[in-house]
Length: 223
Image 1 (cartoon, rainbow, N blue to C red):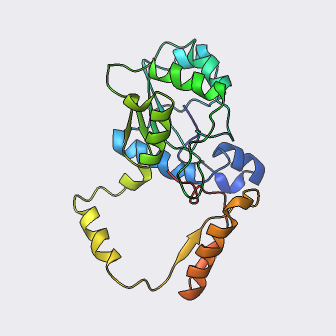
Image 2: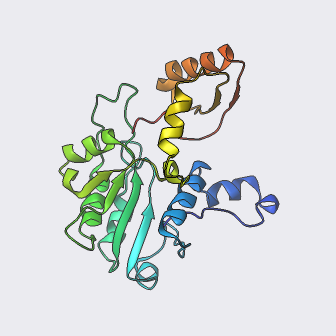
């Protein structure tokens, strides 16, 4: 369920249509690609707007690549109604919570989103958790609403694109080195509460003579 991990012939598609195809966020392509690498196959993609009949005909197990759906900004009530009518078991991967910059709050989740979570955990194939989240903050949010034992904190799937066994060690060594340049892909014109954070990122970029690219990514999100 969700958008695709690449768009064929994207050069010939209108910008608005292309934007819709990637779920209004080009970052979706990264973690969809990561999940395909992790499971070793490219499953059939079913749009979020699919009817229960379409989902039921697709197979016995569904994999749902998720983003920051947890927060007052999104009501998952429509999908909750669909989930109550489907037969396949489901795994949700990479679910994130949209919180404040200080990540010391618990966002108010709409009733529709809580209903979706309830329907989602009921589709687990076993008694084990069927949700992976992007970080401990998201796990804290789920625990607050009674779903903590249904989820595991494994990080964003995009973190696992590199399959090198020593990748973490190599990154740690690079972190010890002096930062020479900072490149930033962040920013959202409608999220004014992140202006302080974005100003700090820009300052880091300027201090290192780096570059910035404004795009609709979820970098400022606290997971």
